[in-house]
Amino acid sequence: MGYKKKVIVLAVVAALLALLYVFYDLSGNISYILPRRIIKVIAIILTGGAIAFATTVFMTITNNRILTPSVLGLDSLYLLIQTVVIFVFGSRSLVMMNSQINYLLSIGIMVVFSLLLYQFLFRGEGNNVYFLLLIGIILGTFFNSFTSFMQVLIDPNEFMVAQDRMFASINNVNSDLVYLSIGLIALMILYFLKYYKYLDVMQLGRDQAINLGVPYDKVVKHLLIVVAVLISIATALIGPITFLGLLVVNVAYEFLKTYRHMYLILGSVLISIIALLGGQFIVEKIFTFQTTISVIINFVGGIYFIYLLLKENKAW
Image (cartoon, rainbow, N blue to C red; front, side, top):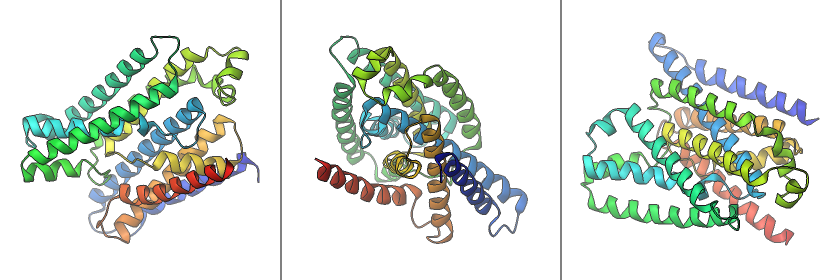
């Protein structure tokens, strides 16, 4: 089966899972339940699509299928933002109670952090993506440590609120945030289209891309902005899911057997949607909300990450 047909199969499976999630065991107050389920499906599509999209682009930039945007420290920064707000203002402050303010604040700080990081690190000619990753890992560790320190100091009741922010949850997603996310993601896709044509060539590596006429450093800076904004949107919408991008993009590479980014991005997005829809269905119908989607995804993704490390070790 060619990769084009495989993408069609993935699209059909994703559509069937979406219909199953929306209409399975639909009873009771349908006028209330049905819109909530549809909003959840849209949130899953936006989140899964944004994470898969950003991770595919990021892996192409770094030319590494193990590194994901989480190494930039954005997930850790999100948790720090939520903890600082609770520590300073309390869980009943306007920023925490108003989901739109919290959403925009989180995205704004994460994007500004990314832009400042890129501006500082790419100022000199000698700096490159790998130096950026190193700084991202260091800052991510610092953010995690500072978050843990602040969570020890806050009131236990406030800590429970902060802890809820540490796990992705689709159940309490705000419909207004979903509509806002659609607009922001649409803008990022339009911005991305200008640089999409370079991705297939950049897969060959920095030197080969420059030799073939790609303005490599300029393209990397703009693509990293796209990555940062998409990950920020996804994280602020439902919370951090560390291993989702790693899992779905590598599965897409293995399943599609192609390096054409149009199909890789589509395949990664569809596999991500399938994983989130399937995971959320299991959370609700099998585990009856005793766990969260992020726990399942991170468990499976963590195992797959270890497998990839062992596989790369054997290759060397």
